[in-house]
Length: 204
Image 1 (spheres, one colour):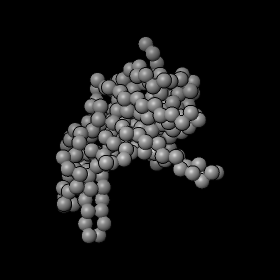
Image 2 (cartoon, one colour):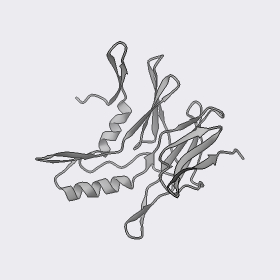
Image 3 (cartoon, one colour):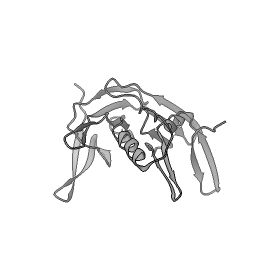
């Protein structure tokens, strides 16, 4: 019997490890594929983002429309699963978990990059909201180039979805971003200098 996936919290002072089982992350195993040779092995799979939010760990899998929050002080785990009207709620399962050729591995990995991808929610302390970007399913345009819609979802401070929209001026992966004074800042290279794209959420 397989053990559920877990996240480890290390207490450096007491030199202890606390394993937090998160059975929902087992779904991520369905997206993995391995290629093994006599020289080693390669793996392709969507990742999991982990970030501190006050006294809690926020755990956000990139392949599933869900968020897990572990309260360090209360030693409790809360699970939040969402539904989108714009994007799929999960990536598609790999038909098999291991392939025998490098060509097949590259092809499956390429298809994986075209799947929906959920980013880590960003907290806005000024408005007590969370903002999350999602890359929709990509489509090929031109000579192998990929194009995808990007979706912004807004949650309240208890992770209840308020609304989602793809009507945003974003046509590439947001990369590093943060929230300050009620604005979302996205890093952008402008003539080899650091610049920002700023978003402000207004209720109408």
